Image (cartoon, rainbow, N blue to C red):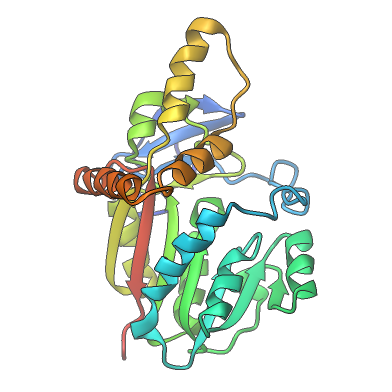
Length: 296
């Protein structure tokens, strides 16, 4: 595939790239301008992830500590509560919807996975099965829109972000998380990092690239925090190379680590200090996004 055939950077539209190698039949490119990582092409219909098969009874349940963390996150949205409506895009197990509803929000959900949407409807939530373009929400309808671990999947991220701007009220908040292209895990593991997983994840943003894309989409007052690291995956990588081990669950190990770090005030303090260091250095595995719609 020639460079002309490759898609440009989904964050800044630059075509000047370097190739880190291939994974799952996709070339992994790095933008020389903003540092975003992305696949050389968008998956076609035969390659695209089938999210109807993604969720099952086992992964529609989440550990209890996540609920407590979501209470803290949603508590930070209070200053944006005007019309009292919150939309969670890609709600999955529905824990964000549950916690926000318990905290008094009128909650809405959007999900491309039919099983996840059906289980949410059965629990009484107002949800739409489908993508953002066909959701039909009114302009300026929501105070807050959340999207946790969604932007890395989207074939046309800027189009979806413009729609988020449209359906947010003036001054409303977009909050999201997405893997970071500048993660320490990528620096160490390169293509072996489990988060770099086409055709499921087709771009990992740098904070520079994400900022450019969000501003171009119509947001203002864009800021980031970068946090999180899974040392278990890094240790497993080097141990497996020496001992031929291959049984490992990155998600399961991350849950175990986070749960362990919430069991006491001292462990919580350690976690906070570690995340603070990762944020200052800009090398956490995840970008946390805060972006507001202009007032006029």
